[in-house]
Length: 250
Image 1: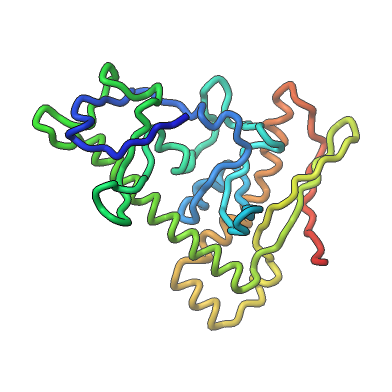
Image 2: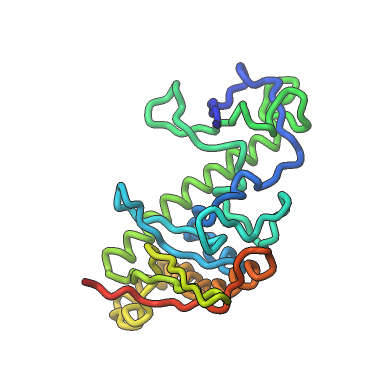
């Protein structure tokens, strides 16, 4: 269980971070968050979809790392095989949290119970004068970018939803045994509606750079076949094919 603490020089003067860290904390995750500004890079490795939180009904964008719950096909023996790792998973043991001394203000926090954190590790957060090291400055900048990207992604998804550009789909996975499995509750962009945008919308989306994440997301769907290849290289049930099927509205 993570124990996040806001980083302060008074409390964490001697705290250090391990130089070598892995992504094993997502070994059992088949989807992870990814922000819209990352879609172009993420699309080089895995499918990117929108999912809806069943409790809040809020949409969020995710990278699909496996074909069933608990399966991460890109992580083997703590080694990450994809070209790109989403920002959301690469910040461990750091995260943004509320600053207890400033109302409604976010600040950099560290998981003091992480195996990568301790006074006996390699890289200090503060120097002998109590000043933030380049490492910690980079962490703060990265967390700031991640937050800004998350805000941008919320606006991007709202744009898609408000203009009915989202289409619910399901993936039908056919195994070599003949068994079929479905991956449901995922959304992508409706190409027909995208092509039906008005000239005014096209100009607006182009000027705001929205077509880049849109087309990256659409292009990434083809990476489901890479997931099948990765699955077939393991001892798990082999995949014969995957179909993308639109879900008919009731």
